[in-house]
Image 1 (tube, each protein chain N blue to C red):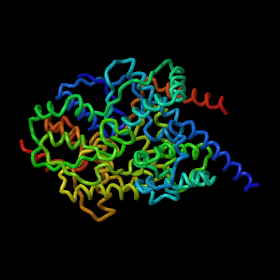
Image 2: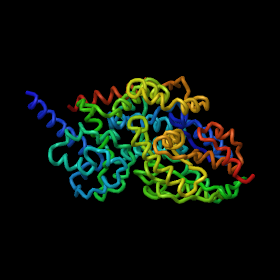
Image 3: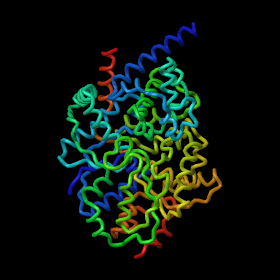
Length: 195
Length: 290
């Protein structure tokens, strides 16, 4: 049973990936990847990745994109866009990484080792609450739940930042902060109609 | 010259000095900045990781407000805000589906946006609107003998390369040459600092910052100037962590380019928030000829 469920989920992830990528501007260019590896060679974090950017496209072609989604790869992308500006085929590889992050979130296929998905979620929580990202709240929540060791390492610099007025305790709420939730709700309802 | 101004979330916290110095510098140059009314977070890279259309739509809320508020171009200072807002424009223009979805979502909150608001980086405005000629004329305290290492970071000109080259940008070099500084040419000026990974994967980000700092130090840089709050924070506030990890002794002042440029136009250091830096800038200030 487990085997079957995994297979159907793999199929679902694969299908969702194709559908989403083909809807992106210039998404169809993924078809002309010639596996040259310029992306992986340009990536500042590929040395840490389970699958480098070139292998991500290779794995997709081999029907293994679900394995990539579960890997540490996508959460090590820093959005530096080196791969995107250098790809001779014009593939927007950074956008593919975002798509894979979204699938990881949607299908709950997050690598346990990565703290990045939590950071992303907290960031969005903060923006939905205030309309802006309240950095102190974000860093505080992240450090407390995911990386308590960081608090100790950072005490000295934290104090300097605090006394320099660079860590304000209170958030500024924008007037139209309910608009962001309404925007999200609208888009979610639209997506539900398509599916 | 008049512009709408989008400070971005960091400008209210860790990147406060960027906001303070931008306002002081622009006032000195006779450029009027009017803050965008009730702006929201651009979404940065995090929103792209949840739903693509959400990220474009919340960025577009800012652009819709800007269009309603004035015909002036919209200036962003943070590289990530600049890229996210510009990318939203580009994708709305490249894809009917994105355009329709964004406007549907904006319609739900009584707004509309046609995809045409000009988004500019503050450096673009300095170089191309104010101009190097006017800048050279207005310098009152030339940065003679100061070795400046411009650090562009990633989203300054990547992916779009709108006002500068994506792989070899030179605008910050040109600005500081015009201000009389010795601009340091070093290989890492567009390499990634690790960004948000400093929180989530510290060892990797420290390694990236170490490489950047070493590369600037090897060329005897007196100061590194940045154009992005995350870059500035990583290179400055994490220098002690880099030193502890790699056994180095870096003590290089890192500041926003608007802070150092402000000094060259005679703005007081305290009005540029230079006293709030983590790495002391006292030695640097003393080295700038009066």
